Image (tube, rainbow, N blue to C red; front, top):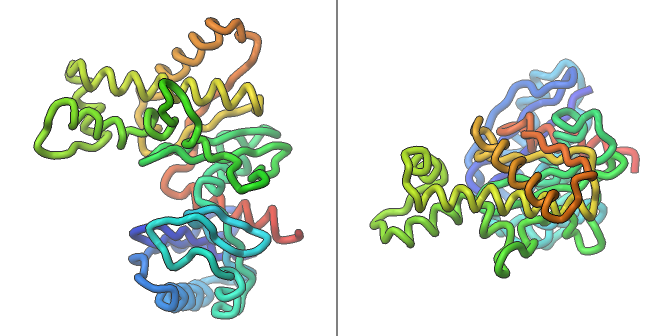
Length: 293
């Protein structure tokens, strides 16, 4: 079985062929500036991959930004790729490629990757929090993706935490770095990696921001688990690759449980196994979930 997996991002489009339970022949191209150009590029990639595949490519499965209505084949919401939204995306792309096309939100794909092939593969229920410029996520119950009535299932970044701030505002290293730069009146912006480096060197303001990230994530996880009670919580995104990241979050989480006398609830938090390839792998999982529906 061969499937073309695609991850459409704001600056680049990644792709690979899924064969023998693994990603093969990976590649990428710059995200085009129009819908017609994107279709042309995907048709080119499909042709090239077909030549390298020993089997016929059955379908094209895609990870995209936005609020995805998988049944209607429409991408709602908004993103940096404005031309992919609010029209019959799947219908038009199937006509262009001559293959069945499946789509799902990128954070949901990341969660599916962990649920089916990664850190939560042995669990029946899991949630994923993907941390970047905001906090996205996914809810998996009975190994099914739960998107909700308005497609807001897993949009953890909107959750209110301390003093009316959202989880995205307090748990994102991008937002934390901006707060630091403003507080220190820096002439130039810094990124999350620089913020953590400053904290390691003893910068008290940077340490305060890093501690806030840990606490906000712990609050978010605590609240999510009271509603969903999953077997596994997976944390992904660039920040999660730090070896010193997970333990402070677990410590804050244990403190919250103790304060609220909720120690009996077992909360298992793991780092996502898939990072750069998560959306591609999750797109494949989405194909398997939806192909017979």
